[in-house]
Image (cartoon, rainbow over all chains, first blue to last red; front, side):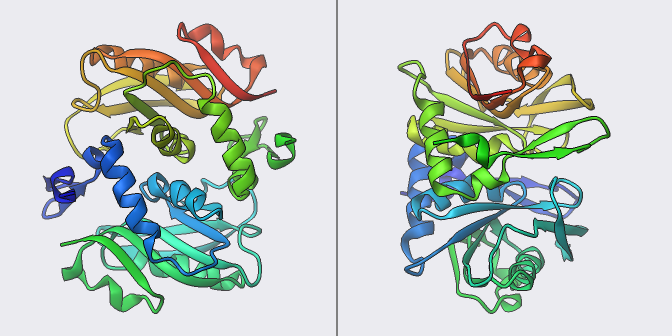
Length: 168
Length: 168
């Protein structure tokens, strides 16, 4: 399956100079979605206790990955969106700064955690989530992404094994 | 399965006087997630072409429902978040006003559409999404929700068949 035909380039979104990879055509195809889902779970370690999806586009495949692996799903969200007690990490990304939060009881000590997001860009977001997991006593066993923007060198930010389905 | 044990009450979130139903414990249990997913697809009409998930908590089950039904998934998002050409509807909800957008090419004329969100409260959000679908020529064949807050009478806003897993 030629997945690239399901990714739409949007120039100057969300800011001038950014070429945004729009994955909505891929989401709109059940066959393309299923194909990517299989790739995303194809090389996971034996045991995964929890899958984290990063707000908001990391939720699209995050819950589906969790179900495939019979793991619990954990949303990591932007500041103020999670209702219960949280811990927080600041991060910088391709276009701006923000903070990410996780519920303090979401990861338990010793949990083996897979982190998922739609795009690996500079790696700042994923690195912040790795920090959140480790502060709660979990171990990150894989970070996976639908798309990796290799020219931004996000891999260098992450010590964990990385899987990406599409590379640009 | 007693699903209510997976829902956590959070008083005064996101605003004073609101008792928020936190579904993250349910997401964190693969068994509870799978149980709810089965309920959400158990009474769907024969043919569903597209499943809409409403930002952001509607994404948790939205893609999983779409995969179960072999349907395409469409995100409806808040103003400015979708990268391609959109149409928009204003709506009012339990705590504030906002606008929701959908890509103009997401629904095709004649598509049979299922709309999913985590909570049915006053129905304002779902009603706005029904309008978006109908403006694009689609037919809403079901609106389904993980939780229905019956005392807010959201059902009265919607003419489509409604399914909810948990009622309060």
